[in-house]
Structures are given as structure tokens and as C-alpha cells.
Length: 193
Picture 1 (spheres, helix red, strand yellow):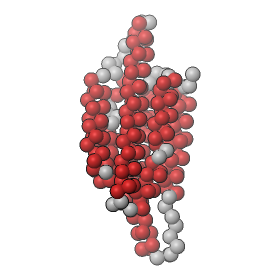
Picture 2 (picture 1 turned 30 degrees about the horizontal axis):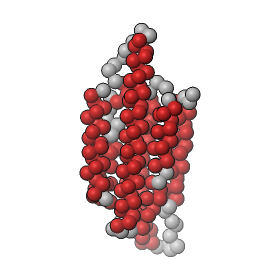
Picture 3 (picture 1 turned 90 degrees about the vertical axis):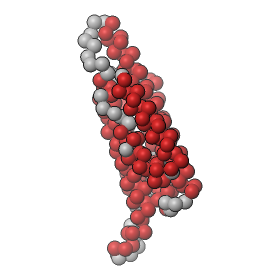
Picture 4 (picture 1 turned 30 degrees about the vertical axis):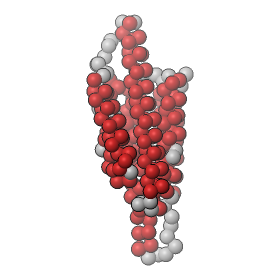
């Protein structure tokens, strides 16, 4: 069985590599003139939004990991799926950074973030359900029932409803409404826990 610390270490390592790949997409200008760096401004915008998304999701992932009692096989597989979808962020960020108004990169960027969001929501729901099952079993053994739902006392979907909506609206408005709806559903559902 995988421990929480192993899952966190595995996830942290992959996310650090993804952050590194994203920053390495910046190219050193061939000129020493300060205006030479401005050619990369579109990539800087897409990189900044991707970085905010990933940073917020990483924080939420750490929060989730701090609240779960054990890592089930299902949770590990879904975490790996989320990391797989996350590995497409550098490609989507680099491609849309070449031309912020090109339709192909916009669609790809929106699809990557939509699939990435769905995978993260699946991870959250699995963590909630697994945590509930473990708590019920602990209560049956006479353990203290501890607060109603310690897993999501804060809204984990913050990254989707704040920075996520801004990025979707800017790059791919057609995906924005669905993304925002998923975030609100998660927020409402987690607060009922």
C-alpha cells in the first residue's frame, strides 16, 4: 500500500518537472536590447496563467493529501490520471504562447484545461468518498467521529472558480461556462459534506 508521503512526493516531483519545463520554454533573446524580450510577451501571459492554475491546484492537492487517512489504489490511479493530464500543460502553454489569437491553440488549450479540471474533480470526489468510507469504518470501531467532514473545510475548487475562469474566458470562452459550472458544483457539494 502506498503511503500519503509517497503519493505527495511522487506528485511533487512530477509537478516540479512540469513547472521547470514551462519556464524553459522562454528563449534567451539573440539581442542584448531590452525590447528583444518583448517578443515573448504572449508566452509570458500563457505561462503566467498556467503557473497560477498549477500552483493553486498543487496547493489544493497538498490540502487534500493532508486530510485523507490512507491512499487507496483507486485514489493513486486517479492521481496518476490527473498528473498525466497535467503533463500536457507545458505543450498547451507553449503553443498558445506563440499566438494568443490563433484558434487551434485556443481550442487545444481549452480542451487540456477542461480534461485537467475533470481529472482533478474526479480526484477530489474519490478522496471525499474514500475518506467517508474510512471514517465510517473508524466510527464502527468506536473511534472519535471528529468533525463532520475534515476533508474539505475550505473550497478546493478555488483554482477553478477564480484563476481558472479568468484563463478560460481569455483563451477559450466556449469552455469557460462549463469550467465555471463544474467549479460551482464542487464547491456546493463539498460544503454539504
